Image (cartoon, rainbow, N blue to C red; front, top):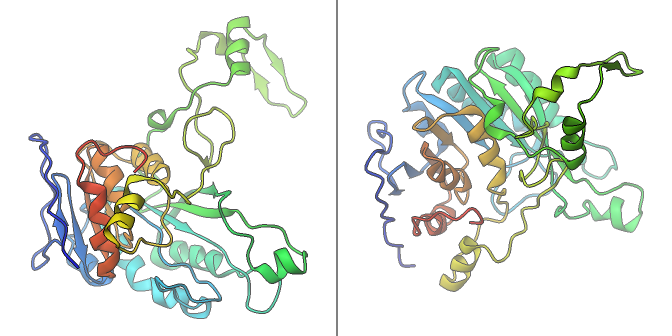
Length: 327
């Protein structure tokens, strides 16, 4: 298969991060490098306290095997432990680790596994992370699985939520929710214009008149991550079939990563937790959505992926300097 041309961008005020000694990029842009290799090995070569944000979605522990590889639930903590220790080490004191992880059913039973909760407890109690906040990704494109329980016997409902855990090296990671403000709803704007009166809700929560002085320029985002286009609960899927990456892969006969997350997911956290020129690392890069978003937002990035086929195809995200949002 022919290698793609190296992407060429022209952002003279930025340079990609320095690569660890002995590490060669698979491809590079003006903001970052994609690295082909085992992420545990690559992470070990990154200096202490040098990364502002690690955001990733590792292979989930499912009771059936996926083509991109996934560890067994019974061994998941042991499998993830080497990555966790290195992520903790490379993070800056005010850095964050954002982990997207999905749940699963126990094999042969209509009961849910606790593997991801056990992992969270391990990350906090054994590695030393602090749980800054738990967030949720509602993905309506998820298939109704396992079929036996959901579509055949009809004894369970469709599972459409994945956990996103925001972990930090200290209780005080760098964050600014003003970077992810959302438009106020029409009702909230009307309340603002009508100058609400001081009152107390039945719950005991005090409503102050001071809201009348607040500009209706944005409301604080909730812990349900969405695409930012509406002020209320909104969902997004990851089943895009016509984005540029997908179309380019189809045209070239290249295999796409089967479990891509949408660009709006890393974008939310990169905006919330980093500033321009900060370093973002994704140790399970897949199709390198994280690197593409970091590039668009002016952050340096490193993407690590051990499956060369997925990394080769991910270059299609970087051959257009406009870096469209829908990529």
